[in-house]
Amino acid sequence: MLPPPTASDLAEHSRAINFVWTLLAGFLVMFMQAGFALVETGMGRAKNVAHTMSMNFLVYALSMMGFFVCGFAFMMGGINGAPPGSPAGSGAPLIGGPSALGLLDPSVLSHMLYVTLAGKHWGLCGFSGFFLTGKSITPGALVLFFYMMVFMDTAATIPTGALSERWKFKSFALFSLCVGAFIYSAYGCWMWGGGWLASLGVNAGLGHGAVDYAGSSVVHLQGGTLAFILCIMIGPRIGKYDENGNPRPIFGHHVPMMMVGTLILAFGWFGFNAGSSLSGMTDRIGLIAVNTMLASGSSTVAACFFMWKVYGKPDPSMMCNGMLGGLVAITAPCAFISPLAAFIIGIIAGVIVVSGVLYIERSGIDDPVGAIGVHGIGGLWGILSVGLFANGTYGEGYNNVAGNVTGFFYGNHSLGQLFAQIIAAITCIAWNIIVGGLVFRLIGRWLGSNRVRPEVEVAGLDIPEMGAPGYPEFVNHM
Image 1 (tube, rainbow, N blue to C red):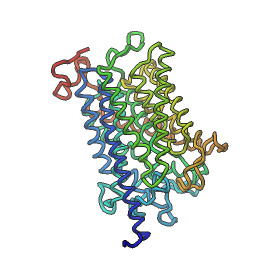
Image 2 (image 1 turned 180 degrees about the vertical axis):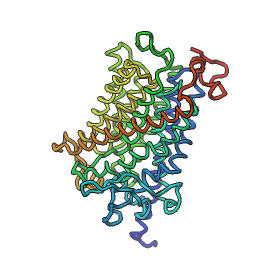
Image 3 (image 1 turned 90 degrees about the vertical axis):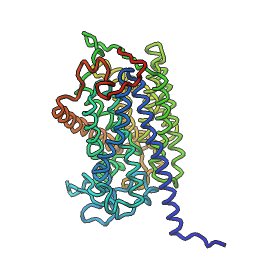
Image 4 (image 1 turned 135 degrees about the horizontal axis):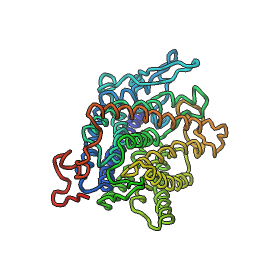
């Protein structure tokens, strides 16, 4: 007869389950790259297929390089840090909440740069884990790197759709490297790495500090904001607007590709949201999966019937954008809300995302795939909805604050949690507009331009930029 398992055995088994769960979820998130590639390519024209698909392919490797060299260290290198004069391990806990704390050894990723204001310590930037060397070569840190990397890659991918059909490939490559190295990582540290936004609860009494369970702001609002400022800077595609500034429709070449890509993204999103528990030992993952499903469904229906009512037809591309907008919006609050709230958040997302896509187009900002509306507006709604719909049933100890995360509609009438969410949203938008815009401008000056020549854009980017057509036997030059 085998002896009963010891406490050490149980702890080791729990860690192993958490490792496997987090890796499997990360595999799903990595597969979302295929979904993005199909959506963006299908919404574009046949003459640019090889270029758009190649951006989606190479961004995975390029942004990974930047994240490996220094991005991960800046973002998560201080997750186990402690403010000056505090005992080790007293910094902000790992994302995923208390159930995920066993993922990392406390001595790993423990160097944070702090600034002291009004007697409080505010984390700015991690400083350990560069090149995954030293103590960062531990099972938990490696699992965390993998999972954080595929999240970062999602944010880096978002601008490729918004700037498709006119973005010079060299400019794209350099910018994607910078996203992985530091643009994405700074705000990621502030929210998830024990930084100052996570400390708004402990240091300023604003609820649990800024809370973003799976990335409505860290991933999607960042990507959507980068898409917004870069679209303004690069300008619209030739022929998109008439002489009076009115938008002309430019139809994508492959509707089935776009819709299949959207379903792949919806499938991978279960790894995105439920996997952010970083633990297979919590029963919260079932609720997260259901909330994710409900929000995606209600947002799809809302977008479909909104287009049907206002414009007379249920547009396929807006159905896709509606579904993705609901998924983006539910990503931040998915663990803290009820299924009914998820349903409502999805309905609102479906309407505001589609309305936002159309308003952005009429404003003279050419976004071929609607990335600004889906990820920017959807991400903004998601991060704010935590401060409204969190029902106070989950989140004990989150960001080192006692009690559960509670929003305005469920009794937090001090508005502390909502204020923390607003501060996070403003910070995210400002950081990415200023830093992302500056990096893009510097790259453009170095290369001469971020945009291909007009004759290349009109003829199609495949041959001039990539040296190969996407469809050798059929090239549409319209």
